[in-house]
Image (cartoon, rainbow, N blue to C red):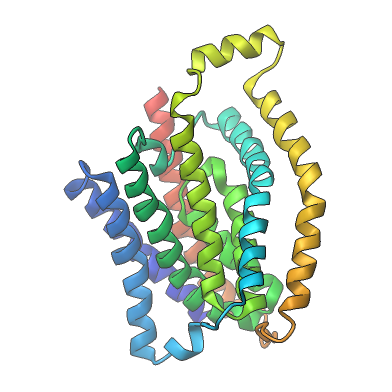
Length: 304
């Protein structure tokens, strides 16, 4: 239950930094993002581990072989269509229930190459380091005593909710499960950081590359001509690619599993979700749900 209390405390700090940043850094979204990640997540967690003397216990760092790093990169790249399929389904649900919502990355335009480089540093590299320090070190290490399944589930649940992007909850949850698995098998948070960075890097690259694509109006006319909607086309394209690539991903993960038999972290279930754990979990979940609710309400009011 102490881990849930830590998660609650860090998320309250994170929310406080975000709120303060809105007033003082509203004109510089790149700086706002960096400050939130560093001051709101990484520093509180690092201070906690230093004060409690748990740095060595919580931070798993080992050398990861080159072939395993290549597998991690390949799996993340090949998983993009699956992620897009989940995001499309998630977005369809959110749009029908609440209307379109948008996250921070939708507020940042990438029209020039210098903006692209800045985005990679601030929105790909910084989160890959800071969020992994928080979620795949202190949080994950503290929850390991619940067993591998519950540990992965809770870390991924809070990871997806912390991003406060309702239409990407499913894809972010799936990404987190993958990152947890990378850390678990390699025994090194560096593998999770790499996977996280590659995922964000690809997303930003797609955003930058799509600046010259047809406008929404042109795309709508083209889809109408073929009797399709944007969602139906996305489901068809991403669904077909997912069916083709999932077998390849499974093969790579089996190879990865074979390569990491000697490096995996031993996770032994030492406790269960008793009354104390549930009592600590509910406030943590409430804080995260409030964050997501704020995003949904603000977007609904914006539409109205």
